[in-house]
Image 1: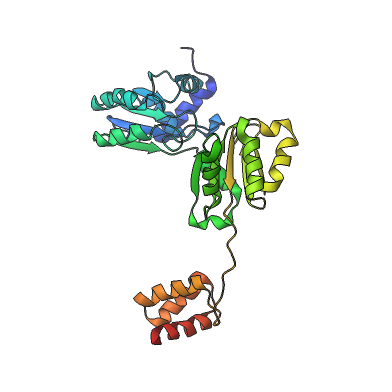
Image 2: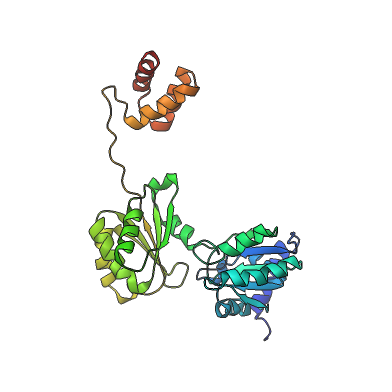
Length: 308
Protein backbone atom coordinates (compact mmCIF):
# COMPACT_ATOMS: atom_id res chain seq x y z
CA UNK A 1 0.00 0.00 0.00
CA UNK A 2 1.32 3.48 -0.84
CA UNK A 3 2.12 5.95 1.92
CA UNK A 4 -0.81 8.09 3.08
CA UNK A 5 -0.97 11.64 1.80
CA UNK A 6 0.09 14.48 4.12
CA UNK A 7 -3.57 15.49 4.43
CA UNK A 8 -4.61 11.95 5.44
CA UNK A 9 -1.81 11.84 8.03
CA UNK A 10 -2.91 15.13 9.59
CA UNK A 11 -6.52 14.01 9.58
CA UNK A 12 -5.73 10.71 11.28
CA UNK A 13 -3.67 12.49 13.94
CA UNK A 14 -6.63 14.79 14.59
CA UNK A 15 -8.93 11.76 14.84
CA UNK A 16 -6.57 10.09 17.29
CA UNK A 17 -6.46 13.24 19.42
CA UNK A 18 -10.26 13.64 19.34
CA UNK A 19 -11.36 10.03 19.87
CA UNK A 20 -8.29 8.03 20.87
CA UNK A 21 -9.11 8.25 24.56
CA UNK A 22 -12.67 6.98 24.10
CA UNK A 23 -13.73 3.40 24.79
CA UNK A 24 -14.30 1.28 21.70
CA UNK A 25 -14.57 -2.30 22.99
CA UNK A 26 -13.85 -5.52 21.14
CA UNK A 27 -16.61 -7.90 20.13
CA UNK A 28 -18.57 -4.90 18.88
CA UNK A 29 -20.20 -4.10 15.55
CA UNK A 30 -19.66 -0.44 14.69
CA UNK A 31 -22.30 0.98 12.33
CA UNK A 32 -20.42 3.84 10.69
CA UNK A 33 -21.98 6.65 8.65
CA UNK A 34 -19.79 7.69 5.71
CA UNK A 35 -19.94 10.78 3.44
CA UNK A 36 -22.74 11.09 0.90
CA UNK A 37 -20.50 13.04 -1.46
CA UNK A 38 -18.08 15.33 0.35
CA UNK A 39 -15.26 13.33 1.92
CA UNK A 40 -14.63 16.10 4.45
CA UNK A 41 -17.94 15.22 6.10
CA UNK A 42 -16.50 12.04 7.64
CA UNK A 43 -16.37 12.53 11.40
CA UNK A 44 -13.10 12.31 13.31
CA UNK A 45 -14.57 9.55 15.45
CA UNK A 46 -15.56 7.54 12.37
CA UNK A 47 -12.04 7.90 11.01
CA UNK A 48 -10.54 6.76 14.31
CA UNK A 49 -12.81 3.71 14.52
CA UNK A 50 -12.16 2.71 10.90
CA UNK A 51 -8.48 2.76 11.76
CA UNK A 52 -8.99 0.71 14.93
CA UNK A 53 -11.28 -2.10 13.72
CA UNK A 54 -10.04 -5.52 12.66
CA UNK A 55 -12.21 -5.65 9.53
CA UNK A 56 -14.73 -3.58 7.60
CA UNK A 57 -17.94 -5.12 6.24
CA UNK A 58 -19.28 -3.05 3.40
CA UNK A 59 -21.90 -2.79 0.67
CA UNK A 60 -19.32 -2.61 -2.14
CA UNK A 61 -15.66 -3.45 -1.57
CA UNK A 62 -14.62 -1.23 -4.50
CA UNK A 63 -16.28 1.86 -3.06
CA UNK A 64 -15.12 1.25 0.50
CA UNK A 65 -11.64 0.27 -0.65
CA UNK A 66 -11.35 3.63 -2.37
CA UNK A 67 -12.50 5.46 0.76
CA UNK A 68 -9.99 3.62 2.95
CA UNK A 69 -7.14 4.32 0.53
CA UNK A 70 -8.05 8.01 0.61
CA UNK A 71 -7.76 7.84 4.40
CA UNK A 72 -4.48 5.95 4.30
CA UNK A 73 -6.03 2.81 5.79
CA UNK A 74 -5.75 -0.84 4.81
CA UNK A 75 -8.30 -3.24 6.32
CA UNK A 76 -9.72 -6.66 5.42
CA UNK A 77 -13.01 -6.09 3.60
CA UNK A 78 -16.11 -8.29 3.85
CA UNK A 79 -18.69 -7.82 1.08
CA UNK A 80 -22.14 -7.59 2.67
CA UNK A 81 -24.92 -6.33 0.43
CA UNK A 82 -28.63 -6.92 -0.18
CA UNK A 83 -28.02 -10.17 -2.09
CA UNK A 84 -25.79 -11.89 0.47
CA UNK A 85 -26.57 -10.16 3.75
CA UNK A 86 -27.81 -13.25 5.56
CA UNK A 87 -24.81 -15.42 4.64
CA UNK A 88 -22.19 -12.69 5.03
CA UNK A 89 -23.57 -11.79 8.45
CA UNK A 90 -22.39 -15.19 9.70
CA UNK A 91 -18.81 -14.25 8.81
CA UNK A 92 -19.12 -10.98 10.73
CA UNK A 93 -20.71 -12.70 13.74
CA UNK A 94 -17.85 -15.19 13.90
CA UNK A 95 -15.36 -12.35 14.07
CA UNK A 96 -17.39 -10.59 16.76
CA UNK A 97 -17.60 -13.82 18.77
CA UNK A 98 -13.78 -13.98 18.63
CA UNK A 99 -13.61 -10.53 20.24
CA UNK A 100 -12.81 -8.54 17.12
CA UNK A 101 -14.04 -5.08 16.28
CA UNK A 102 -15.92 -4.95 12.95
CA UNK A 103 -17.26 -1.83 11.22
CA UNK A 104 -20.14 -1.87 8.79
CA UNK A 105 -20.44 0.87 6.16
CA UNK A 106 -22.71 1.32 3.17
CA UNK A 107 -21.56 3.04 -0.01
CA UNK A 108 -22.66 6.42 1.34
CA UNK A 109 -24.59 7.79 4.29
CA UNK A 110 -25.99 5.96 7.29
CA UNK A 111 -26.26 2.16 6.93
CA UNK A 112 -29.39 0.11 7.60
CA UNK A 113 -31.86 2.89 6.74
CA UNK A 114 -32.33 2.59 2.99
CA UNK A 115 -29.06 0.73 2.43
CA UNK A 116 -28.22 -2.80 3.64
CA UNK A 117 -27.21 -3.48 7.24
CA UNK A 118 -30.46 -3.85 9.17
CA UNK A 119 -30.37 -7.66 9.00
CA UNK A 120 -26.74 -7.70 10.16
CA UNK A 121 -27.58 -5.43 13.09
CA UNK A 122 -30.54 -7.61 14.08
CA UNK A 123 -28.45 -10.79 13.93
CA UNK A 124 -25.64 -9.22 15.96
CA UNK A 125 -28.08 -8.11 18.63
CA UNK A 126 -29.74 -11.54 18.70
CA UNK A 127 -26.32 -13.11 19.21
CA UNK A 128 -25.71 -10.88 22.22
CA UNK A 129 -23.09 -8.72 20.51
CA UNK A 130 -22.86 -5.04 21.21
CA UNK A 131 -23.81 -2.71 18.34
CA UNK A 132 -22.45 0.83 18.50
CA UNK A 133 -23.71 3.56 16.12
CA UNK A 134 -21.40 6.27 14.80
CA UNK A 135 -23.71 9.04 13.57
CA UNK A 136 -22.93 11.14 10.56
CA UNK A 137 -24.09 11.98 7.05
CA UNK A 138 -27.64 11.11 5.98
CA UNK A 139 -29.18 12.28 2.72
CA UNK A 140 -32.64 12.07 4.29
CA UNK A 141 -31.90 14.46 7.14
CA UNK A 142 -29.72 16.67 4.94
CA UNK A 143 -32.58 17.17 2.47
CA UNK A 144 -35.10 17.85 5.23
CA UNK A 145 -32.79 20.46 6.75
CA UNK A 146 -32.93 22.61 3.60
CA UNK A 147 -36.58 21.98 2.70
CA UNK A 148 -37.79 24.64 5.12
CA UNK A 149 -41.11 22.90 5.66
CA UNK A 150 -42.48 24.59 8.77
CA UNK A 151 -45.49 22.27 8.65
CA UNK A 152 -43.22 19.38 9.52
CA UNK A 153 -43.47 19.75 13.29
CA UNK A 154 -45.19 16.38 13.46
CA UNK A 155 -42.17 14.54 12.08
CA UNK A 156 -41.62 13.17 8.59
CA UNK A 157 -42.22 10.05 6.51
CA UNK A 158 -39.41 8.27 4.68
CA UNK A 159 -40.54 6.42 1.55
CA UNK A 160 -37.15 5.88 -0.14
CA UNK A 161 -37.27 4.56 -3.70
CA UNK A 162 -40.73 4.02 -5.16
CA UNK A 163 -41.44 0.81 -7.09
CA UNK A 164 -40.06 1.02 -10.62
CA UNK A 165 -43.30 1.05 -12.61
CA UNK A 166 -46.95 0.21 -12.96
CA UNK A 167 -49.87 0.38 -10.59
CA UNK A 168 -47.62 -0.39 -7.62
CA UNK A 169 -45.58 2.75 -8.30
CA UNK A 170 -48.69 4.94 -8.69
CA UNK A 171 -50.17 3.61 -5.45
CA UNK A 172 -46.91 4.20 -3.56
CA UNK A 173 -46.71 7.76 -4.87
CA UNK A 174 -50.28 8.43 -3.80
CA UNK A 175 -49.50 7.13 -0.30
CA UNK A 176 -46.56 9.52 -0.18
CA UNK A 177 -48.76 12.44 -1.23
CA UNK A 178 -51.37 11.48 1.37
CA UNK A 179 -48.91 11.76 4.25
CA UNK A 180 -49.83 14.58 6.68
CA UNK A 181 -46.11 15.30 7.20
CA UNK A 182 -43.19 15.91 4.81
CA UNK A 183 -42.26 12.79 2.84
CA UNK A 184 -38.74 12.00 1.59
CA UNK A 185 -38.24 10.11 -1.69
CA UNK A 186 -35.18 8.88 -3.54
CA UNK A 187 -35.17 8.67 -7.34
CA UNK A 188 -32.81 7.42 -10.03
CA UNK A 189 -31.85 9.88 -12.80
CA UNK A 190 -33.48 7.82 -15.58
CA UNK A 191 -36.85 7.87 -13.78
CA UNK A 192 -36.79 11.46 -12.53
CA UNK A 193 -38.67 12.99 -15.49
CA UNK A 194 -41.49 10.46 -15.14
CA UNK A 195 -41.75 11.11 -11.39
CA UNK A 196 -41.90 14.88 -11.82
CA UNK A 197 -44.57 14.50 -14.50
CA UNK A 198 -46.63 12.30 -12.16
CA UNK A 199 -46.28 14.80 -9.32
CA UNK A 200 -47.27 17.69 -11.56
CA UNK A 201 -50.43 15.85 -12.58
CA UNK A 202 -51.40 14.41 -9.20
CA UNK A 203 -50.61 17.39 -6.95
CA UNK A 204 -49.72 20.43 -9.08
CA UNK A 205 -49.65 22.93 -6.21
CA UNK A 206 -47.77 20.71 -3.72
CA UNK A 207 -44.42 22.25 -2.90
CA UNK A 208 -41.46 19.97 -3.54
CA UNK A 209 -37.82 20.45 -2.62
CA UNK A 210 -35.59 18.66 -5.12
CA UNK A 211 -32.01 18.09 -3.98
CA UNK A 212 -29.42 17.11 -6.57
CA UNK A 213 -25.90 15.94 -5.76
CA UNK A 214 -26.10 16.86 -2.07
CA UNK A 215 -22.74 17.95 -0.57
CA UNK A 216 -20.97 17.61 -3.93
CA UNK A 217 -19.44 20.30 -6.12
CA UNK A 218 -22.52 20.76 -8.31
CA UNK A 219 -25.11 20.53 -5.53
CA UNK A 220 -28.50 22.08 -6.27
CA UNK A 221 -31.50 22.59 -4.01
CA UNK A 222 -34.65 23.76 -5.80
CA UNK A 223 -38.07 24.30 -4.19
CA UNK A 224 -41.15 24.92 -6.30
CA UNK A 225 -44.75 23.78 -6.84
CA UNK A 226 -44.82 20.37 -8.51
CA UNK A 227 -46.39 21.85 -11.62
CA UNK A 228 -43.18 23.84 -12.29
CA UNK A 229 -40.72 20.97 -11.90
CA UNK A 230 -40.93 19.35 -15.38
CA UNK A 231 -40.03 22.70 -16.97
CA UNK A 232 -37.17 23.17 -14.49
CA UNK A 233 -35.80 19.75 -15.38
CA UNK A 234 -36.02 20.45 -19.12
CA UNK A 235 -34.37 23.87 -18.84
CA UNK A 236 -30.85 22.49 -18.38
CA UNK A 237 -29.43 19.04 -19.27
CA UNK A 238 -27.39 19.13 -16.03
CA UNK A 239 -30.60 19.23 -13.97
CA UNK A 240 -31.21 15.56 -14.74
CA UNK A 241 -27.76 14.26 -13.79
CA UNK A 242 -26.61 12.92 -10.44
CA UNK A 243 -28.30 11.57 -7.34
CA UNK A 244 -31.67 12.91 -6.21
CA UNK A 245 -33.55 13.29 -2.95
CA UNK A 246 -37.02 14.86 -3.00
CA UNK A 247 -39.00 16.25 -0.10
CA UNK A 248 -42.75 16.40 -0.69
CA UNK A 249 -43.84 19.16 1.64
CA UNK A 250 -46.74 18.45 3.96
CA UNK A 251 -50.13 19.02 2.38
CA UNK A 252 -51.72 22.29 3.51
CA UNK A 253 -54.17 21.76 6.33
CA UNK A 254 -57.83 22.34 5.54
CA UNK A 255 -59.28 25.32 7.40
CA UNK A 256 -60.81 24.23 10.69
CA UNK A 257 -64.54 24.63 11.00
CA UNK A 258 -65.38 26.57 14.13
CA UNK A 259 -68.53 25.93 16.11
CA UNK A 260 -71.02 28.60 17.05
CA UNK A 261 -68.89 29.46 20.09
CA UNK A 262 -65.71 29.99 18.03
CA UNK A 263 -64.03 26.70 19.02
CA UNK A 264 -63.10 24.39 16.15
CA UNK A 265 -63.25 20.61 16.37
CA UNK A 266 -59.55 20.07 16.99
CA UNK A 267 -59.50 22.55 19.87
CA UNK A 268 -62.66 21.04 21.30
CA UNK A 269 -61.12 17.55 21.28
CA UNK A 270 -57.99 18.84 23.00
CA UNK A 271 -60.07 20.59 25.62
CA UNK A 272 -62.18 17.49 26.28
CA UNK A 273 -59.08 15.35 26.85
CA UNK A 274 -57.59 17.89 29.25
CA UNK A 275 -60.83 18.24 31.18
CA UNK A 276 -60.77 14.51 31.95
CA UNK A 277 -57.49 14.93 33.82
CA UNK A 278 -57.31 18.54 35.03
CA UNK A 279 -59.37 21.20 36.81
CA UNK A 280 -61.43 23.35 34.48
CA UNK A 281 -59.32 26.52 34.69
CA UNK A 282 -56.05 24.67 34.13
CA UNK A 283 -57.52 22.66 31.24
CA UNK A 284 -58.73 25.83 29.54
CA UNK A 285 -55.35 27.51 29.93
CA UNK A 286 -53.46 24.58 28.46
CA UNK A 287 -55.96 24.15 25.62
CA UNK A 288 -55.58 27.82 24.71
CA UNK A 289 -51.79 27.49 24.69
CA UNK A 290 -51.83 24.30 22.62
CA UNK A 291 -54.47 25.24 20.05
CA UNK A 292 -54.34 29.07 20.00
CA UNK A 293 -58.13 29.09 20.28
CA UNK A 294 -59.67 32.06 22.17
CA UNK A 295 -59.49 31.49 25.93
CA UNK A 296 -62.97 32.94 26.56
CA UNK A 297 -64.52 30.67 23.94
CA UNK A 298 -62.73 27.67 25.39
CA UNK A 299 -63.95 28.57 28.87
CA UNK A 300 -67.54 28.76 27.61
CA UNK A 301 -67.17 25.40 25.85
CA UNK A 302 -65.62 23.89 29.01
CA UNK A 303 -68.61 24.98 31.10
CA UNK A 304 -70.96 23.37 28.57
CA UNK A 305 -68.95 20.13 28.62
CA UNK A 306 -68.85 20.07 32.41
CA UNK A 307 -72.52 20.82 32.89
CA UNK A 308 -73.59 18.96 29.89
